Length: 480
Image 1 (cartoon, rainbow, N blue to C red):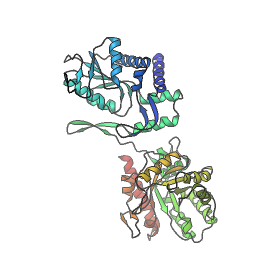
Image 2: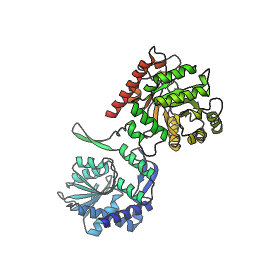
Image 3: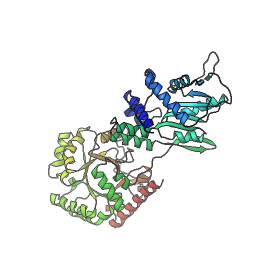
Image 4: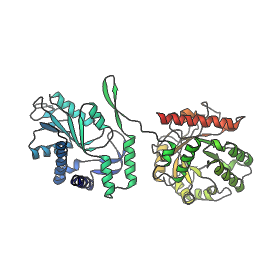
């Protein structure tokens, strides 16, 4: 076993050294954006490595006790592997063409075909299993039996189950998880990249479904993590972790938008509704009687009732300016606000300016990816740029103001304004959606509610109605 493990480690590191395993951001044939790309075509120019791969594939078939008469490699990368296996071990080989020739014999399979014989499939990488099945179908039409396939790497994205459903046993030399383990041990990739790839695998698994008697492979929905589980993710921002933990503890994903002009009312709202909320959103520049003493009282209430303070400042200037706005002036926002938000229009400088002030004080930022007002320009490429900027500055940015989930990374939180128990709008362009729509269908995490609570004759009762509606929508999402 030790010798086999050493041989596998040698093979994996050898493949990495010739860039067969690439890490970064790649668009796959399926259209998916992947943090890993596997390309074994280059080994045809490295005979020793080619022979090493072929030998370990053949040994895997031998160890599995597979009985076969011929070998066929899935075109095109596996063809040289099958050639080396067959020439080294004196086994008849078949070649499957991807397309029929329009001249000569016009055959799809070249070689000596004896109907009833068993053919072993050789492949380099299996993802969904579709390429292997295409070869299986062609060989079966020629009267050959196909029961097994040997692959160098199983990406663990549903290919094994799909092949099994079609009666094909998959034997892999190693899995992508094993490759990651070896490369991390050999210090070829870091722990952060390993986690990125593992998460990608989990979020992009294909499962076999039966539709009217036909088997189809569809993408499996990623398992939804609870707020509590997300709070414990490695590398999550401390502010995000704190927020997720108190959300789980208090069973609330309600943020109160306390847009009031009087400090006394702001404090009254915080005290009365604090137990029902996870966050209180302020607009201190509309307070008629703002003082830092008021904010000290607010932070005391936040600690007492366990909620975070979010100043909805919407910073949108160059880095040096937002830095001064954040730490200075009469508001001194960084001294009392756990969270602030910013537009991405100025570019990454706005985040860098805020981060320089906020990071040492353990503050965090949300980026405005979408807005709830009619005619908003925060859509499309603007939203994509907000996500990219958040990923580049995840040491300070913990999520988004958005109408829906714009990032699949569970470390990021999504907060959605414009929420009422009943959908609708106002005469100033605000569009309202229900908690069920926002949390349950659009995948947001926290609803931001202002007028729906503040204008109610019974604010506490209204807050509890919103809290329960949002929490139930979240629980329903977990149950799917």
